[in-house]
Image 1 (cartoon, rainbow, N blue to C red):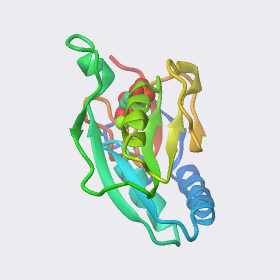
Image 2 (image 1 turned 120 degrees about the vertical axis):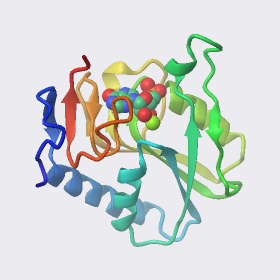
Image 3 (image 1 turned 135 degrees about the vertical axis):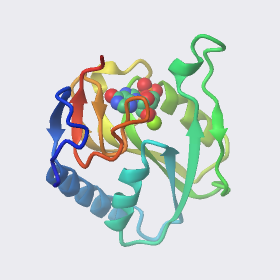
Length: 181
Ligand code: IMP
Ligand code: MG
């Protein structure tokens, strides 16, 4: 079942299998648990793409932590109007004096994350770091720190494991290159 293509879509080319993803997330969970042992940690998941990654990552962690979510409008959706990224769903918890780890599905241009980090920094966390499942260095427009990363992907559009194209493909258990129509 694992690597079947439920959409029967020939436009999908598997880049990272379910097994590779599991192994990578296991290693990340172990490293993060060691790095944050004894610290007051809040994981901030960026909706909606990070949910699969966040859930599986936390299952591999063995330290206490809190979880919260934030949602931001994508830069491209705003480009025709104000060109400004904004928060569409804010955190419920205070992050002041907490160690914050932002959990992202993908860091691509870095525009959304750059905005998000500036915003979160103004709330005075004890520390602020970033963990992303996929990193696409070739597409970076603004420089953003990526402290933990799962995969360095080539400059292609990817779907699966939370990542979508028009809200579809999130439930694929692998990550695939998708050639947009
Ligand atoms: P940014 O370009 O780094 O600001 O990425 C903004 C958001 O666009 C990411 O958090 C993803 O939700 C989405 N995104 C960027 N690249 C891809 C992709 O290759 N596949 C699916 N979603 C993407
Ligand atoms: Mg996102």
